[in-house]
Picture 1 (cartoon, rainbow, N blue to C red):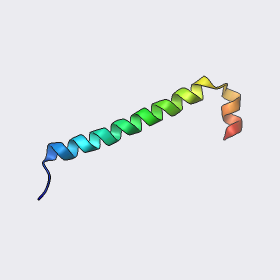
Picture 2: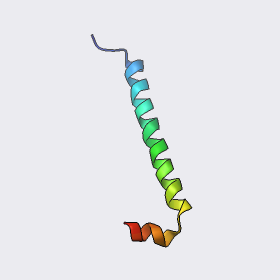
Picture 3: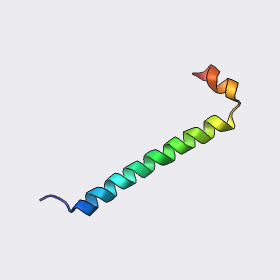
Picture 4: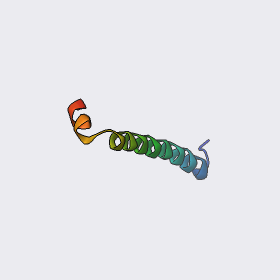
Length: 42
C-alpha cells in the first residue's frame, strides 16, 4: 500500500533540511577560515 502523501512529503522535507544544515555548516567553516587557506586546500 502506498504511504500517505504527507508522510512522503515529511520524509523528503527532513532529508532536505539535513542537506541545508550540512551546506550551512560547510559555508560557516569556509567563512571562519582565512580565504587564502581555503583556496590552498582545494
